[in-house]
Image (cartoon, rainbow, N blue to C red; front, side, top):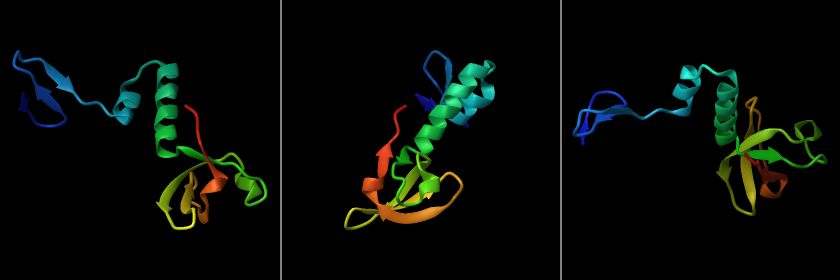
Length: 98
């Protein structure tokens, strides 16, 4: 297997394969439903958690978020989709289902 330029490689019979990222697939997708599904998977990959409590930050209830840093005593630095960051307990987060 010889490495070629870019994100592709050649097998011994000259067949060229490409390593496609999700972003590339979204750009190349012609069907709207496929494009929407790929965008959803990309979004779930980037923000795999959601905020599950209403008592603290009620305006953020059920909003997707991600953990940037895990700290001691079950704390975490969490970032939401709009860039807002907060240090909170990891009990306030739940994994999103795909």
